[in-house]
Length: 477
Ligand SMILES: [Cu+2]
Image (cartoon, rainbow, N blue to C red; front, side, top):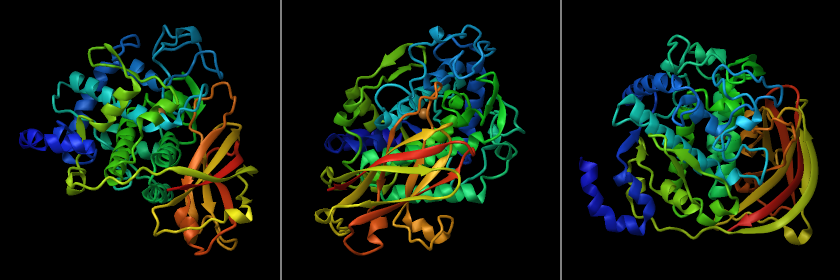
């Protein structure tokens, strides 16, 4: 009640500084899944999921349909079977619904929709949350989030012991048995969280939270074992979460994505004025088609997407704090200025680090001035061979005597490359990866005429490699 009364008081201020609106206007709270309230919301989620799973696959609010909006294995493609016990009418490519397989950023065709990764998933998850709220008959329901860094065990109602509607057998077995995320994997998660802290522009943040932390957790939860995947109705390598077409069928998907959304919201609060713009949303046309909890379709224009992400109807339990309410001056938006573009041919396989040096022309010395409001960004264009699987780490100016596995290498780590993509025809695709390399370059404390890159494969199946074809270095100021 108290929160509601504050709305008119802050109304005028909120108009001027729109990111303050959500703190006061949002009626729902997303809690960490292991907390008391988080556990209560999981009980509601479990109840609703039983009903949604019983609805077949034709109703837009059903579990199958909602999951398929993200991605779905196409019968007859990539060795997929044409029998489908979960959706008997879905037997061929001609039966794909127009709203299915629309996950913004993992698509195989059309222009790269990477810029839509965070907003598309935000609205997708928010619409699913309203469906769960209705079907759980819990009027206060909000999806919880899984903060794996602080609480590295799978929430118990998702585990094998529960055997309820949130359990999925096709996951990493140790997680399903209640064992925590391994120390190695936790180190990777922390390494990526740290790398995200330095980023000040949306395009780089969106790119790295996607291809670093987000993809890593998908692959980790999915595991690397070849296992029966009920969505494909056959054995595939990795569980539901490890393959784009089956990822959203595992209920853990939702609490993973609320955590990604929570991290983004924190970044937005910490970087006023730097969030995605209408121009960026319009730069690649991507459909935002979801369903209301009564099954009615809802289509968003890009302006409506922007309005929705600026004023969600929920807050996170740890974000109703002073930092979001103090009237910070909004800094100018940073602009990109390309310094150089260099063709490359770095091939990273499973057999050790690959290296390359980007030599800059003398007149293009890189000057790192950490006191100026200026960042240096590296863009890499990369593609893959074999299965688009696994994680590759990128290090900048790593001294030769330091191994990538050594703790000393951490401060030279700038970000990841991964291809968590839907590529049933095995076409391969070129993707852009962006890194803020300011801090890594600043270690050498001098003007630089070269940038040394080290790329190493750290997880994934033995098959497959990544090829970096081009690098671009730019100033952001
Ligand atoms: Cu996705």
